View 1: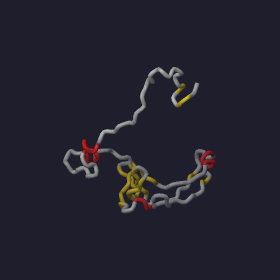
View 2: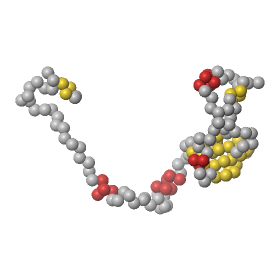
View 3: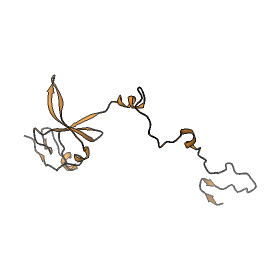
View 4: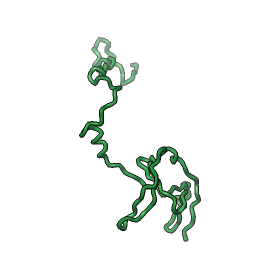
Length: 140
């Protein structure tokens, strides 16, 4: 008995196949949607842009970055110091979805940490990938 994809072939050639294979036919979306190359009008009050502007985004404040090896991370203990690639007093970087968009200084506002915007970045990509590999320091 010969095999084909999907299981063994029915040994009785006079029997009708259970399923027929035919090409998939797609509906013509261009007729139902119009010209999809035209930009959507998002300026309408209460429209899609208004809804998007209400989506909350998580802003991360990056004080600095360290690049330890896996072995260094495995040896970390309470009291160890991880040295960052920034200097005390340097502006921190604000990111949304990993993309830097501003520099800021750390401040205290009503007993909470906060940031004061120093600069909005024209070219956020300029900060992506800036780093050195400082060593980890043993704790005091």
